[in-house]
Amino acid sequence: MTWGKWIVAALIPLSAAAAQAPQPLQPRVEAILHAAGQGPRWGIVVADDTGKELIAIDPNGRYMPASNTKMFTTAAFFANFDQLDQPDTTGGAAVRLETYRKGPPDLVLEGHGDARLSSAPDCTVDCLATLADAVAAKTHSVHDVVGDDSLFPDERWSQGMSWNNIPTRSGTAISALTLDDNELPMKVTPGAIGAAPALDLPAYYRVDNRTITVPGKEVTLDYSRDPNGYVVRLLGRIGAEAKPELIHLGIDDPARYAAWRLKALLEARGVRVTGKVDVRHRPLAWGDDGTHRAGAPPMRPPQQPVLAALTPPPLGDDLILTNKVSQNLHAELFLRRLSLKAGSGSVADGLAAVRAMLERAGVPRADYDFSDGSGMSSYNRIAPRGAVIFLRWVAAQPWGAQWRTTLAIGGEQGTLARRFRGTPLQGKLFAKTGTLNQTNALSGYMIAKSGRTLTFATYANDVPEDVRATQAVDAALNLIAAEN
Image (cartoon, rainbow, N blue to C red; front, side, top):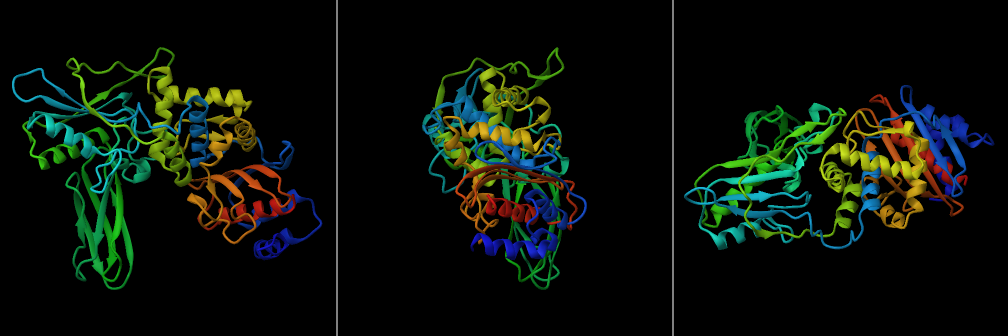
């Protein structure tokens, strides 16, 4: 579709006022946003390739960025680490046999911050089965199987994350020992009408199944679980003609889950486990200055040499995944690995590295506050002008072009695969999305009609259910690009 046809097609349905000309550009953009409905608080800044602001709507207001937060976390990682295209030689999980009593040794599975360790049957790279094979080749009996995630202090959830997200894959716990994205799949298959549907999931959780199969294709399933609980309450209805539904459950103690899965893999290989599944966490302590700091590691027996260790694929691949699909767990792990440069692995030290980057970028301190690395925290704030200053600074860095490739592409890739499709910005907009608690965000770069690159940051907070904020933002960005 041409730019002119897009303007006519997109703007008339939203607002007759928005299609009138020759008004200045900003009032027309504001008319598009107003036509979306009452309620949202809008913050938008768009700058041209010289830094001149073309649009500035509440530029210094502080907005909840949702997953726009991942922009800052991943950029800080690029700014502090090199050789991201090389295998991850420091992050892979490892196993040790520890002997300090009579009888079989304990088996310790250590996590080093890797986000991609897998126990899937078809796993070919970074596989827990590889470690199980190494143990089975060494011994036929172990006592306890211990999941050790003490590389990071025990901060499984960020401050300000909504408690209702904890049972979901979006709010799964963060740990230095991560397996299968710290998610547990549960497949719900319709049964006979009037009967409960069939459930297929590993025995890690117990399900209180209160669902019923009904005629037709209706699916209205809901579930809940108490934090650190092991009983999932499944509610709702599923139609007898509906396809099976796959629900991804969050895991609250990833180290325990990883040790539990390793125990099963060992037993499948003929290794006898005579003890229990156990964990080693590092408690979090408060510093004298009132900020979180990492506590001392727990007491443990003298460590034995590593029996086997994994080398995950390059971290650059995971940075692309994290921003393209907005992977919360992986973003949080990048924040904690960033903090290891300060020696702690804590959220506080990771955020300190992000703040140091933003200071170098010239972003005013009043423009931002962050409490996590993924955007799940409702405490995070960013001003649109500060976000544009940051994005323009990133573009000028030696790694800026590489970082830009991690962003979703309008109408083509990632979380933007369906947005901007069929518009002049398809394939010409590179941005990070954000959606959380009546919040919609979109920030990045777009190629205008002139061929110049514009930098933008858009935020809609307090969005009512009946307001289509993303449609308004998309129309506004197409208008801005068409007239520049």
